[in-house]
Amino acid sequence: MRPVRQNYKTGANGAGARWGVGALALALLVSGCAGAGTASAPGAGGAEPAHGPAHARGAALPAGPARALAAYADRLRRDQARRAAVAKRWGLTAVPLTPPAPPARKPRIVARKGFEVDDQRELGLPPVFTTVPTKDKVVFLTVDDGSEKDPAFLRMMSDLKIPYTAFLSDFLVKDDYGYFRKMRDRGITLNNHTLHHPYLPALSYEQQKHEICGMQDVMQREFGRRPTVFRPPYGNYDQDTLRAAKSCGIRYAPIWNEEVFVDHWEYREEDQDLHPGDIVLTHFQGREEWNGTMPDMVRRFLKTVTAKGYAVARLEDYL
Image (cartoon, rainbow, N blue to C red):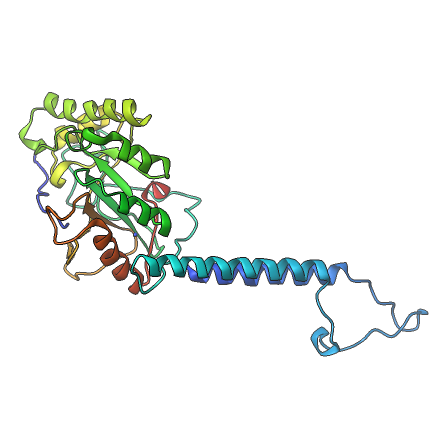
């Protein structure tokens, strides 16, 4: 068995809305035309049909479809104005982009090349990956550990409707499970990050299984579900890690391609840039570890991804 060599901590559109208005307008136009009376043919006792485009003749949509279209457009304008006001309130100069609908067919997730362990495929072990294969211009925000429990972070992410995935270690979250229940109740997925955040390859198989399966028990007891997604602490693992994880019901072991801090980013790839489907890491940390707060980190994160044309999507929607 050879341990995989991850010990580096580097470390989520408006076009859709416009398309929706256009599509609805087209549908309403069609329904309006279909609902209009049919003109009689010339010479059949009826009036000669008018020629030329409808708008040139001063025609209008029937009142019902026109009102529906106007109401829909008004809702979109009000929603965009609300989102702009929320973004401004949280110190953002640009409104975060809206992600596309989740894919109808989930991408096939396999271990990243070079991140496999011995007998990865033969044993059907959970894949370790840093990027989800997708052409969608989205990234996924993941938050690890659980030491900082900032209420402002919860409010900010809820107000902005930014999805993220939490990976929790019990020794850091057990003093306030209620904070993470609030997170769960707001639609955030809570996943497994071991009981004590150890360097797993230094442990025996049974010790690793205790760390992972023990956290599964905590997650079931405190949050009502046993996750299928697990992140090895520090991004370090070996074959025993993935075998133990599989025995505990784990199907995926994502790590990350970038890490965002309050004052900078760190990148795994040589191009030092974001890519569609990248997983971004950050931590539940505050002023004790950073020169700033979690909302400060979120502002840096959103400023970068929005400027580069990326939306933040929900990781579980792609798994």
